[in-house]
Length: 391
Image (cartoon, rainbow, N blue to C red):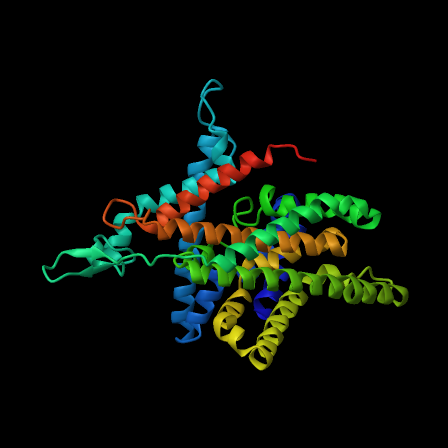
């Protein structure tokens, strides 16, 4: 990942030099190529074969990804703007589907694109055409496939009492927090930041990031909430650590070098991406070692999820979207916590919906397509919430 981050940083410099207008709009997403699952997957697979075979596989994977991206753009731009590459296609009276240029339209377009490719997926064995070929079906004595019975989820009385007391305590804190001037000041500043990251500008439903692990881990409720807790912990703490390294190491070193050099070298603009990657990887490894040493039971349940988070784009995004903008420490940490909580909320909701058998593999829809549609509906709901002016 360090090598990838160096190449991405060099590419970013060239893009900023030759196409500054385009780079200004997508700079944050260029940085996220470092943790793009496509890049990491093809590199990992390429290490197991010879050089030219690896280049062929990498080229095919990248070409397929780019082709899908372009086709999605050709689907969304005409419906949203009535143009293709800025060329008008329809008259001014043609109704524009503005929803298609929003994150909601992105989910719907992706689901439609996957639905169109379903025959190809069935032919290649990527999805199951019948329930009998899927893991969710089991054969009876007569040979008729039946779905597995869903286990009943029960909540103990103790859990309900603890949950009720927690809600009452939270409401009491919100009501009486204004009695303390210092806390009230932070409350007024940080609560809008938290709500913005949690609802209005979520990392999944607004920025369309973190979808790969979200679709995968939402198949089971147990895996969903464990992965969500791990995402909250790693995203919040690693972003806070990256803020300290960025502002107290890179910035101060740049200020020190500027006193003895006539060249305007700013280390925080050159090495921040690589430093963020190293910090996240080191933090995750140290946390895994500490859990293995002092909390073995917790590590056995969540250790695998911690390792997966190292290559989760939302962890890097929470740092690249906030720290280089000059945000304060508490604002940055609160935003990272909101991003992690938003991801956990979405993945648990999606897992609950999957548990209700809303995904029927025998019809023309496969479960991942319906999952993407459900995410689009969630994004529409959160977009509506974002239009409510609370502050």
